[in-house]
Image 1: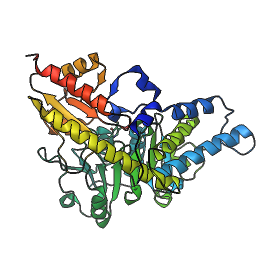
Image 2: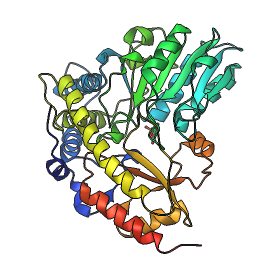
Image 3: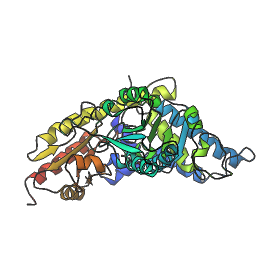
Image 4: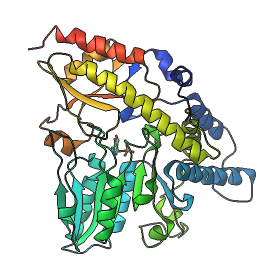
Length: 400
Ligand SMILES: Cc1ncc(COP(=O)(O)O)c(C=O)c1O
């Protein structure tokens, strides 16, 4: 088992020198120097369209190949099935439209009330366009656990879209078990791993599609999807005539962002170095993310107990398995007012529903949402103390 050194980790994030306590990681993590260097070095090196003739062409090609290998190591899948896109949202819209070409009226698609809207709306709109029916899985607002998917599955089910972890309340449904049920029904499983991938060792091979976003795990702003190359071979996305009709390239519209791909590889290498051990990068990633998970969960437990002890606080995430992401409201205060007061003392914990549109409505939070506190490997005990002190100071003064 490796050792996690938060002091050393923090030194690698220049943004922390600005002095804020960052609890805004679920919206996008801060960036280590090595990732910024990889982006900058790529931008100032000779680049060209991918090819084999010039050094510039070969460099671009190598960057793409390396990024696919890095993502495959992170997710435990095949580099030939890694698709890059501008964002998870864009990739999901693209795949929803592509998959919907194979659906017919009366087919069924299952979405959940726990998911970020990027894993809900694209499926609803794609289903509506072909006359397919949407089925909803709710979650228990007391326990935060996702309801059983099984009763909704039948021989008309074509696809189930579910999150690996809620970006609002942290719930981690048992997606491996869901995959078994979905596959028994002969349907496909599309998993949103955007929130989870920064916080736990991942083996995405159970899902037909698993999608995530490197900017949530210390990388640049883009999205990545993994699927088996054999499954991708069966799909026919809309594409330009000259685009190579091969997998995974035929799913990647336009020229890839080489600098962001180089940054993604650097982010994966950075994660592999977060205290884990092992002979291969895959092993070091699994080990490091386990170390990170233990560190973050431990910090979360202490923070949660202290928040819960503050009069007027209501916490919303209670699932047995969840990420280190807390959501709270404070009696007498609007979430926006709390976030504003925290920001005034350089504690960044935003308020809102964070595009978790259905979950926020299901919890009765409405558009105002709640205050979200997300932990990251660069969060330390001093950050937690600052947050608690700031929230405690609010308790005394009500906005009523
Ligand atoms: C759980 C979850 N899914 C999807 C998304 C959308 O990701 P992207 O910004 O890459 O489209 C987010 C972004 O916050 C998210 O937290």
